[in-house]
Image 1 (cartoon, helix red, strand yellow):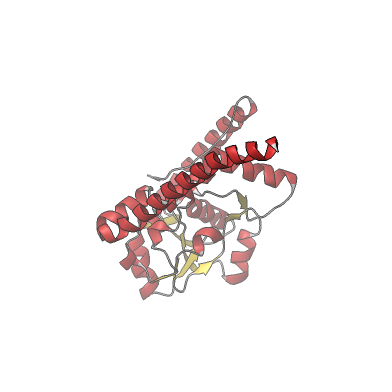
Image 2 (spheres, rainbow, N blue to C red):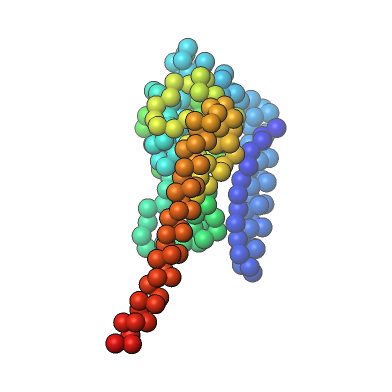
Length: 246
């Protein structure tokens, strides 16, 4: 069984229709992925199995995460070709999507608007032959199974999917490079800054008070700053009234 989460969003009217369409497409994709796995056309590895396999064999580890996750933490020696990446367009349509994403929770979770890499399969073909053993990994497992399906349809024969992605990996499973633990590479926004994500709470349970103190300090600092701004706004009001009266 393929176990993973996916988020779809929409507003009223046409937004609800779009949400329904996306839900149907996701359900159809899950059925295709489960069939590919059941028929062993795409083989499943746990993060630990993938780590051992990558260290002890000549299999390729293909990281398909977007750049904002990759730059925080990556497996040493892995190849990076994103199947989706951060949308950098600055036209009206692109900016409106970014604004909608921010308002709908991006400010809290740090999630970015993504664009599909139309050249993904071509870029993989330029690097690897179709009989190469390729282990595909992303942050949670969704994008890597979708990428595996694309490569299978393009004729790649030996594909391995890391179930649960790097978020399910322990630090000892892979040799990591980058500033963040693998489990924290997919978080961001206000929830990340104050340490309020599930991943950070789990990390705090392991590391203890030294880890919690950092985020407690940030919270206290934010409260002090907000109080100072409020006091400043109150004092500016009478001053402006005095200036207007002269």
